[in-house]
Length: 104
Image (cartoon, rainbow, N blue to C red; front, top):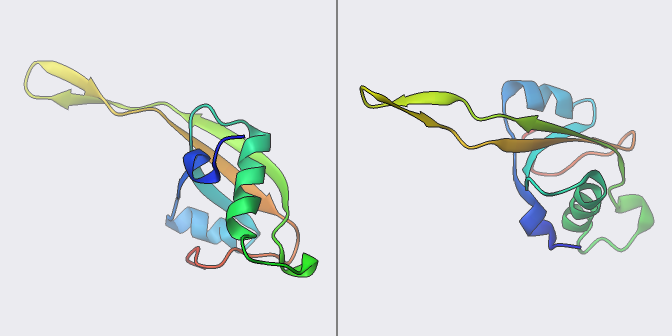
C-alpha cells in the first residue's frame, strides 16, 4: 500500500461539502491512481493515528469516487490551455462519527 499522505491530497471545503459533513460524508481530493480500498485505509490510518480505544477510532463505511475532467481555458488570444484532471472521493463514516478539523 502507498503511504496515506500520497493518496489523500487535501480535503475539499466548500459550502456543499460542509453541509454533507453534517450527514457523515466528507470529500477529499485523492491521487488519480488510488482505488476505493486504498482510500478507505488511508483515511482510517490518518484519522486513527494515536487513538488506542476501539470506540474512538474512525470507521469508513463507503467510498464513492468521481473523476473530474479539467476545463479548457483560454491562454492568450490564440491558444487554449487546460486545467488538470482531478479525482475526488466521497467518504461515508459510520453513524455518529465525525472528523475533527474538517470545518464542521
